[in-house]
Structure formats: structure tokens, C-alpha cells
Image 1 (spheres, rainbow, N blue to C red):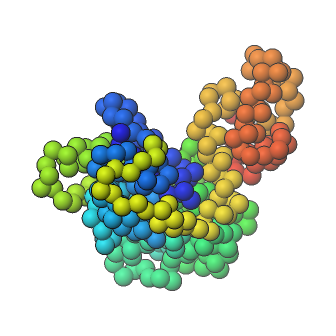
Image 2: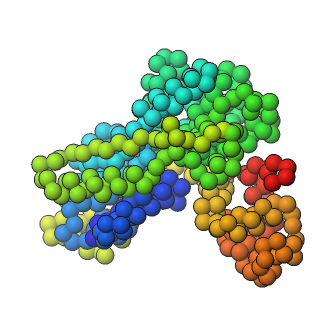
Image 3: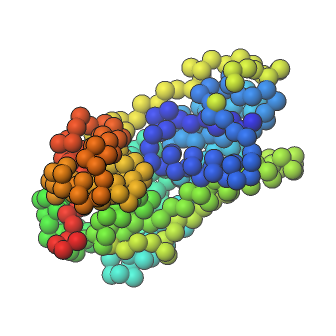
Amino acid sequence: MVPILVEPAYSNSVWCVSLLEGLTGEFKQKRIPFCRINALEEVPPGEQYLYLIGSDAEWVKAALTACNRFGIYPILLCNQSYHTFDADYSAVCSDVVNSTRRLVELLHQRGCRRIALYGVNPKSVSDESRKESYLTALQGAAGERDVFYNSGSLENCFGSFCPHLDDYDAVICANDFAAISLVRRLGQSHPEQLDRLAVAGCADTRLTQLYGAQILSVRVNFAEYGRAAVMLMEALRKNPYLSHVVMMIRWDVDAKQEPARASSAPGRPSLPQSALPAAQDVFYDDQELTEMMLLEKLLSEAEDLDRRIIGLLLEGAAYERISEECFLTESAIKYRVKKMVKICHVKGRAELTGLLRRYLPPRPAGD
């Protein structure tokens, strides 16, 4: 039974959910039993390996060190560049350096030379690696002044960037949510900039896909992380002389869219759960980011009928009209809307519609 330990603060993010789906999907396909755990004391007796999924540098470092002291070999699974931590572990990570270089080359081909990096979370190992790769790719053409940080408020990040709008012709965003926030705010305050400023995101979320040509979204194939992670563990099991393996997954830059049992095995020291810090990353406290993540969850779970209902809600259609156009009873429509309300953590149809209107771009006339 292979255990998986996830950083609590990271667990509900779209990136963590995608990494987990990629890993557990591969486990299921290969019929490998697995379990989610909350503490190292829950590692099944006799199990040698453990998967770690996290983002906060302090939590990842503490978790790796604790695993080593506990006699367990950790395999770190992360959507970030490889970092050297003072611990014995292997990793599946992003080839951020080469992927960023290819993205910069693509922007250069489109005539973009002045490129900013936007929405960087200073506490994220992933975003730190993006920053270093961005600076390397631009080879001195960019510096710290061209990096705009999100320290828990995308609104403040935009406020820092706004006075320098004319200094750039392209922006690489740390993630798709930062890209959506930037495009939305530019549309509200500087709509003329959207025609000249190239905005690139990363992850190719469903929400970003609705923004069409406004956001160049790089695709991250999370299923490949899962395949590589299982392949890595199998290699370690077969060859005891392998002490350290790193697998890097590239971003899909060239094919993108346009704009869990509580027991301790003998010999393992007993470590309290408090051995791992409860990382508090203000990045996840931002209301704007939270709302976009909830909306992304809604869109990822929505069926075609749900998307039709969402479109009619945006039009302000009454339940009677929605019922007629969807060929369902009003009670069935209300049931589906109630499920949407629950997913988005709002109080009713009015708040749900308000949330949808804040983040979904207006549909072209005639659609």
C-alpha cells in the first residue's frame, strides 16, 4: 500500500488536485494499492517508499527530512523545477528551465522583446524556479525590477504592475489565475492594452480556455507526472543501487491554445505529526484567487447540460425558460443550480450568477 502525503495548504489547489489525479490514475491503471495519509505515523508497516506532493519550500524541506529520519524514502512530486534539498530523495518535477526558454523564444518570434514576469508567489518553490528560469532565458534583458510579486493579493500585484504597463509588450504569468486576473483588470482599467500586450499563463485551465486569444496558455500534462512517478518507484524497487533519480517533465509549449492505517513499523522512531510545519501561505488567502479556483472546480465537473444552464444564468433567464430550453423540469434545474452553489461556496443563485459574471468573459453576440 503506497502512501501519499500532501501539504495541507496546497491540497485544494488545482495544481495539487491535477498532480494527485495523474498519480492515482496511474496507480489504478497498474492496480497498485495506495492510500492518502496525514502523518508519517500512518505509513503502512513495511512500506519503504512514500510520495510527497507540496509547494511551500519550508514544508517540503521539513517533510523530506522527517521521512529520512523515519526510515522512509520519499519521492517528491511537484510542478516545479528541481531543487536540491539536504535530504535523501528522488523527484518528478517540471523542466522549467527549458520550457521557459522555449516560451520566451516563442514570444520573441512574435516580436515581443520586453517581457515581464507577473504574479510570482515568493513562498512557492515552483514560482521561485519560474523566476530563476525567466531571468536565465532572457539573458540579462530582464532583472528583479521586471518581476511582479503576488504576496497574497492579486489586486496589489496589479497595482504594482500598472504604472509600468508601457515598459512591456508581453507578460509571462506564474499561473493561469494570475493571467486571468491581469486580463480582467486590464479590461476594466486599460482595455486598449489588451490589443498590444501578449499575456501567457501556465496550466491551460478550463477557465482560461474561455478567454480565447486573450491568454496564451501553456499546457501542463499532469498525467505524465503520474506515469513518471510510478516508473521512478518501480526503477528504485528493481535496482537497490539507484540512490537518486530525477525525472523532468516539459511543458507543452509547442501545442498550446492560442490567445491514508495508524501504525509504526518496527525500528521506526515515533515522530509527532507536529514534526511537519503547518505552512501558512497567504497566497491561498486571496479572495480573488479562491473564487477563481472554485469556479475552475465548477467548470471541471460540469457536464454539457450544466454549461448550458450556466450560459442561461448569465443571461438572467428565469427557471421556466431554462427548463424549456434544457428539456428538464424546473425542480431538476434547481437541483443542478443548487449543486453549483455548493461547489462555489456561495449562498444562492444570485451570488452564483455574480461570481460567474465576474470571471467568465462575455460571450460574442450570436453565440
